[in-house]
Length: 494
Ligand SMILES: NC(=O)C1=CN([C@@H]2O[C@H](COP(=O)(O)OP(=O)(O)OC[C@H]3O[C@@H](n4cnc5c(N)ncnc54)[C@H](OP(=O)(O)O)[C@@H]3O)[C@@H](O)[C@H]2O)[C@@H](O)CC1
Ligand SMILES: Nc1ncnc2c1ncn2[C@@H]1O[C@H](COP(=O)(O)OP(=O)(O)O)[C@@H](O)[C@H]1O
Ligand SMILES: [K+]
Image (cartoon, rainbow, N blue to C red; front, side, top):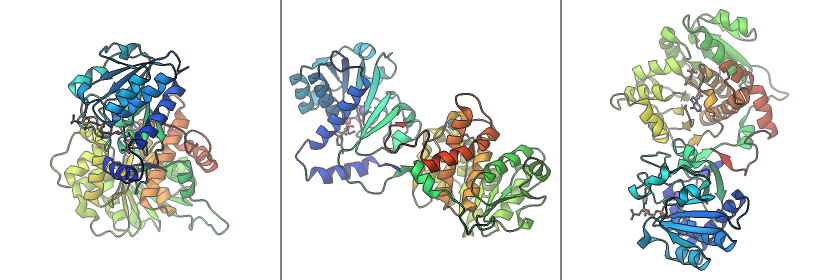
């Protein structure tokens, strides 16, 4: 599990640690880790030209001390101070003593072999200030290494309220920050490298599953298993207008660990033609027979309202997607009030906007606004509907009403293809039916779905059905601990 902590949590851990260490120890550890990463990125340190951008705080201090270490190894290091009177005095003295120089030449940004972004770290807010904005658009030749956080990215939320400096690598200290794992911030961070500095940290604000975590969650049959004990997932999806959604949701469900898939809806003939193993009925969830979880809504069209009502009247977990969400938004959170079994909602940002409006939170916000504030959006939805919410998109995030949040690290934009969301909802519903808790089912489904998207695409357009077909090989890779993302301590490719 990769864990991310908020600025407040990091500051508290830092204060506790500092009380027991000589002054400056943590900064020395941070700078040493930073310099080591820079050295690995350069063909050779000796003779390299390095520009340090240093702001007014400790983030600039880290960058200046790292610059000093690199200067001692023969690099030519120039430091551009954004607030010269407030530059970290110890860092500046160390840099000068190592032969580094202070410059005001901005063109070095475009000619340097490596730029260290120490403008602002976890003390930052509100995007880059005017004096630093130029660096967001200047051409670059070498790599940009962000110190702790790319300057301009909100460390707690991943929001980018103004200009920000795009990094190739971000070296973060002590723990990941939520803003490094969630878009749009994550897209500014490049590859993430964590440097341990000995902080003792509380439960994280945000976590990202890794192979071993997902492998431990995946249901595996044993000698006692039969198809019913493995769980039956009900799928109420598709309509005369959108029969394909039923096929895709069933395809996802068949690969999700349940022992059987029961389809209820008007696309029964199409479903059974494609998947003879599915149990089908023409009616709604009420008359379909016993299941351990329902998936309601993909391509549901006019039938979604009835299917949603019948599924919610059951006593098993219900996952609501697509047209089911539109109907739920019309009804508002009151429709879930009497439920004891869990509810999982899987909106994209357009559906999230409708759900928020349906919860009485004013007129529907623009989807783009919600995508820019993904963490806040998913938390608001989980609280308003008291449900587990998986918000889809460039970074998929999952929140529980109790506050736990997971971010999916495996997503790929190749998944932005019609119907891939239907595969995801079938898959997540199947994991729910197999007995996973809502947060685990949703986040494990997003993890597998992202890997399946990568594997189906391999750099070329793919289809939703191909994503479903790639799920078995992805299960195998995750269980065996191989393939992309398998190494627990490898740098994270954002
Ligand atoms: N915590 C730890 O365990 C360790 C932390 N370490 C390091 O310390 C860093 C945090 O240092 P920090 O607290 O000094 O804050 P930092 O980010 O340098 O900002 C400084 C000042 O900048 C200003 N400012 C604000 N927004 C701005 C903007 N958008 N653009 C420009 N300027 C802006 C604002 O001051 P203002 O101008 O408002 O007075 C703010 O106070 C952390 O990221 C890590 O690198 C390591 O050394 C090891 C252990
Ligand atoms: N830019 C993106 N980067 C990564 N994943 C994306 C992106 N855009 C969409 N996706 C993923 O693709 C899937 C699309 O689902 P959805 O929006 O429901 O489409 P559909 O209704 O056609 O199935 C989701 O899993 C979503 O997270
Ligand atoms: K920075």
